[in-house]
Image 1 (cartoon, rainbow, N blue to C red):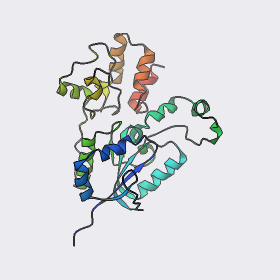
Image 2 (tube, one colour):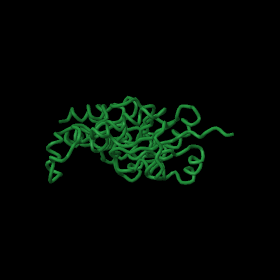
Image 3 (spheres, helix red, strand yellow):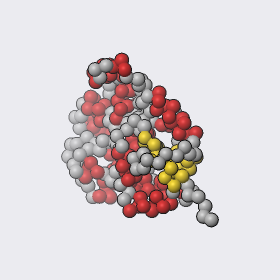
Length: 256
C-alpha cells in the first residue's frame, strides 16, 4: 500500500488572485505537482474543501480586517508548513498605502456609506500575525520560483531562490541600465525574481519583489537626487507595491 500523498492547501486573503494564478500558470508542471500532492483546499481550482491538517499551505493576500487576522491564525494552526506568496502576503501589498494615512479619511472618499466598512487601521503581511516558514516575493511571484519552493519542501530541502538584485537580472539579459538614460529605477535595491521585466521594456523597476538583502536605499535615493529627482518623487518611488517593507518605508519617510 502506497504512502498517502502530502496534503496541499491554497488560501486567499485580501489580494487580486494574481498569486494563485501563478500556480495555475505552471501548466504541464501543474499536472506533475497534482500527481505528487493531495490538493486538499484550493478554491481557485476545485470545489473540494478539507479541514486539514495540511502538510503545506500556500497563502496569498494581506491582513486587512479582523476576519483576516482570525482566519490566518486558524490556518496556521492547521498547517505544518506555511508559505506566503506575493507582495500582499509579505508586506501588505498596494493596500498598505493606507498605512501612510488615516484609513477613515480613505473610506470617506471611496465609499458612499463608510460607516459600514470594518477594516484594520493598517494592512500588513502574514508574518506580523503568525510564524511563517517561507516567504516568496513578487507581484505576482515568479511561477518557476513557486515550483522550486513547493518541490523543495516536498523533498525536505531548502528552496533555492536567488537573493540578488534586479540589476543582476538586467545584466544577464544584456539590458542598458535605464538610469543611464534618466529613468528612476528601484532595481539596485529590489529582490530578483521578475527577470528584469520592466527595465527590459525601458521602464524603471517598481520594486514588486520587495527589498533585496541589505538594500542600500539611502545610496540609491542620493543617486536619484543627484539626477534631479525631487523628494516627492523619491518618496512615491519607494511607496508602491511593497512600500510597507521596512527598508522601503524607512527610506520613503526620510523624504516626507
